[in-house]
Length: 263
Image (cartoon, rainbow, N blue to C red; front, side, top):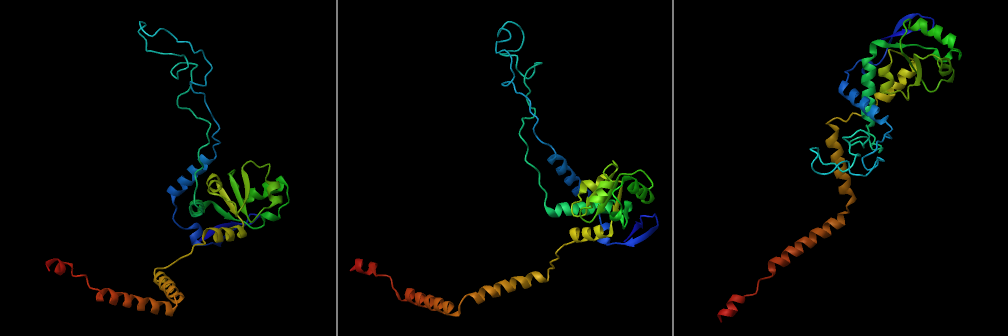
């Protein structure tokens, strides 16, 4: 698969990348699940309201029990009254964090990169820029003329590049080892270094394929190892004991109790 490549001076070309990385199917259901888990885990869970037992109001009975035509109430702290407690509000207990497997995270990130394949630009030399905002802005305008939300993915930490983009609100620099689905989805344009593309390939495409033909061979090998571990002498001894036991049970006859009683 070919992706747009632009140099820091603005010269356009194309570069070939792995089809499995940017050219496969997009799993939108898995992406939605990962985004939901991320959003839920961002909540602190510290909000709390007061119930009717915690509201500081008078405990005196509001009005007499009978004869008013109103419902029976014993206090003004009931949730249906203004100033009373809240019935089903947050209780200040942090909910259990939702979890995802590493495989789910990798597949979701892979789907996000495939979804943004038409907005990916490969650029080499961004790490060599001076830590100056003016120089970084001038270089990014040659690569992305429009005012987009730009995500720059590089290899490892790049302090100079991070310092140069610190005052640019629409630009974010992140390492390829730490990029997530949320970072990719929020960006309009992705600028990747060639080293970052290699890291993403090794990070997301490391799948271990086990074919059906290899599974029976593995089972036979384990069975053979188990048989070899058992000594031949113990097997022969068990067989002799079994034969002797069967012969003994056949030779023993039941006592003739019935014949004795008849006599």
